[in-house]
Length: 220
Image (tube, rainbow, N blue to C red; front, top):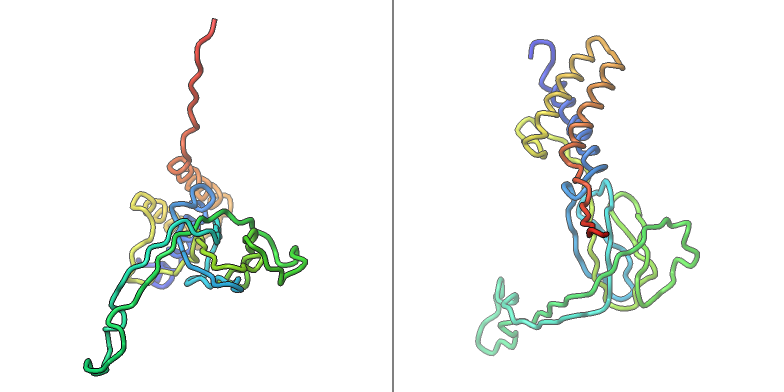
């Protein structure tokens, strides 16, 4: 508190959160994972994500409809200023909810695709386009649902924010910040590597699942 400004401490805390997030992403990315769903119309192949993803865990897609439910709702009533008398606007609209069978897509790169405008019955691959979008290949001929499992880019903390980590990981964050600030005064790379390795080891012990068990029948 005496030797460092609040801004310097906040920079180190954000660096610590990124370090811990990367460690978690290497061991159990499901903890940080979020889901994004949508439907592509025929001829569409671009998936625009709401946030920039750090890592794409899995993408599934499919055009086979396994169930369809038609419901009535009142979407057109809201903000409808037309007169009621002789008004032919329906007071309800029909909405169809479809459920698709989705299958995992294989990740590839743009340069590996020869005919980039190829259309097909089923999407098989996906590749990243820029920082915030994906494309699937071949281009779907039919309406296709998709699901993207991803880890979003880290949004840096402000003074009023809480850490986006589990409470037990806050101890590692405090250790990281204390170590990094003290090392800045008299830099010691060996000491830093030892402390970072210790933090990574402790996180790995918490997140690494136990080995799968096996039952063996006795024999004579």
